[in-house]
Image 1 (cartoon, rainbow, N blue to C red):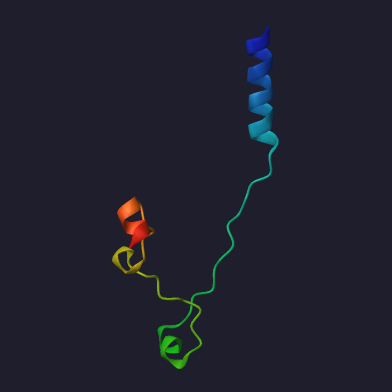
Image 2 (cartoon, rainbow, N blue to C red):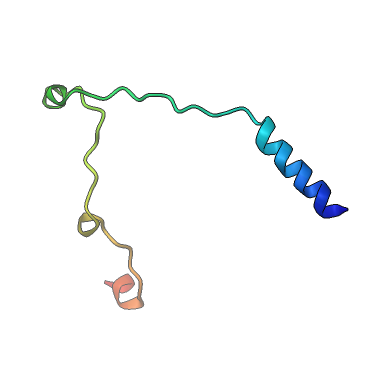
Length: 61
């Protein structure tokens, strides 16, 4: 009985949910990046990020 109710609820939830549509993202033309109008930021490399001290010797230095 429980399995049948669970199956019914599952099927109805899949059939009755409205579809989701993705929205288009406007792309930035390549020529606008050097004019200062870019919204893209420089992502630092992992080697450029300062790591916090992880042991006592580093804490005391």
